[in-house]
Length: 536
Image 1 (cartoon, rainbow, N blue to C red):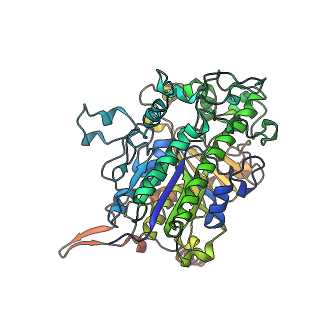
Image 2: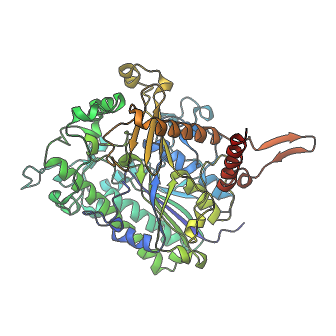
């Protein structure tokens, strides 16, 4: 098989779904992503499968739910038996390349105990060729800065923090300070520049490139002029209870998060004071970081067009998870709220057969696990049996699949193997530090393995402030959500060999596409069952 189109998969990190100006955001401007959406398809209700970065990227690249790939935390090994989008793309003749990171934790059973690969969770997903060694962390960028004369701090991660105060900063807080490096030397610029270097040399033959930007992931600091691009007085208001104490009363796990998230170095209270207007400035700085990524994506898209490559390139833009951004009094992405899991997805497919879908905004529920099946279909490959996701190609062509999910699903594993704080404080076991979410048109249900559940009516309470799980008037809704979640988990158990049967004639395999009963057929069965019972 000879590759016919180029594939460009772009991930930012910690980018909320609402932070696109095409969706009417009142502050942030993303003109280049808006243009991509106008020429492709924007999926308005797209959800990550899990957090934090490593587990979410494992779902993105394998097409599997967390409950199946089981790389549950940053540092939890990804089982080496699973395939992924890069390994599959090689079957189509591509040599998938990476600039940036996949946050893949290596399977220790395939490495010697002294292998350095087992001392980091930031490994490279098998199947990818790393084009810029060291770009899995800040090291490659630091080498670049050192060559340009910048002083590299002893603790390398400190490069992201400002080294000087900004005159006239007033009470806007630390995040108004610009970074110690210029905008043209930022980590975002560095990744975009290396991508253009690659394309200038290898862009004429079909290529597969995964471009992974760190921003707008914290630390929440931006180079000039992006640190001051937006007025903190113009950022949207928060979605939260009146105080952290009132917020904490919603659930024991939320109370645990509110106690502990500030203890992490990247959310240090000295850098991110919990007071106005510094909290609003943090939001403004976050939007500036987004604007910087959008600017460099614009450079990349413009180059593809100038070289005549844009029309032959599949472009996917998404992220691993969202960011609370002081909603519910939290920073980060470890909560069960929409802000942590609702993320952007824009897909621009090449070819005239996709013209009907251009400019479309899809309101159906889509999930990160759908990206791998979509890309594989568009390069002429079937999805492996392990995939839980479904191709979005019909949406891209301007139609809709005959059967589609009616809810979004995600999971969170909050265990701490090294320290054990959740287990100790919440009084639960290591394997009980889990939650699963089903989010429909109206109700959102959160099931904890060993803690009380939560139920929100999103129509009446879009900010998720009132738990209805104990309300007798919502008992039927709670039961229906719990039953749907059970059915979802039963239908999506790990399936790698379940479609194979050994016979005297040898193995018989049921194709993945024929294994799922359409919704119309399921509804027909339910109606027949109900009619039978009504006449019993």
